[in-house]
Image 1: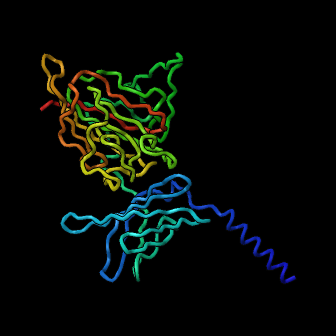
Image 2: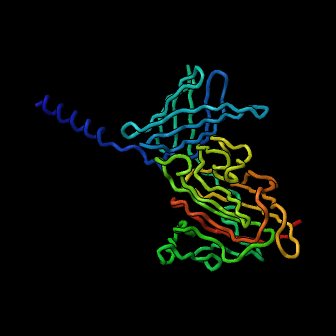
Image 3: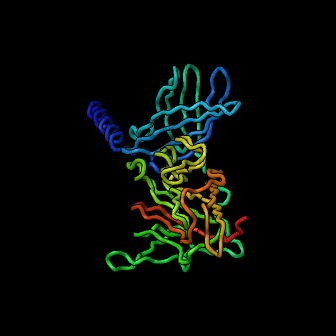
Length: 324
């Protein structure tokens, strides 16, 4: 009887382990803050846990140092049963630990320990109300200033309402009014979590200025792309300032982000002329500072690209301003 009972207990334990599920990727991926401790003291850390295919993760650790220096460490994490284990080596330091309830804990080197907790950063202009004189392009359930495009099959676009905004409809969307002058533009967007996708397939969309210049929308959290292809990039020719896989501006997928754009053009006889000047602030961080665009100014609409990914938009407004 004892042997049979022991056998049954062992079978149940094995079954529980075999069918245990790891934490959801949406809960594990994201931005973390914390520190490591060793014989030299405590070291503040900023961490990006980036979801990848098959439940795996890339763990990017950034340690700011004096004189604007930074130490960067890249680890890997993967699910094992109902936990996520992280491991790797930076120089001669071995890192090993695991995730539980929003926190990674473990050891790093002889006698060293680390702990970092998941945090949420809110962009300073998230939810900014349209000022007097602004044109609300996309408000909550208000699309009057956005044009509905007829699709190639003759049907009308279907707009899916989500979280105070819309999921980008098939065919994209654009403002009804042509824009001829300078303006400030506020845009809020959310990238989907697409762990199995890579590079340009990872939450792709874009915001187009009247002259046709695209400001890229992409899940670039811990995942850089080619020149101008990452989130906030001027497509194909300029990256955001200080852009790499540790980019401070991009937030994780499933979190609302902001672009605050200033687009300035000179006018002659009521028509835009010359090349526009562009300034972009992404989640409170200036990523383009009065950049001269490589396309000539022209009258046009503000467009939002459909790239086949369920990117969401909300709270979009445009305020005309003087060119000076």
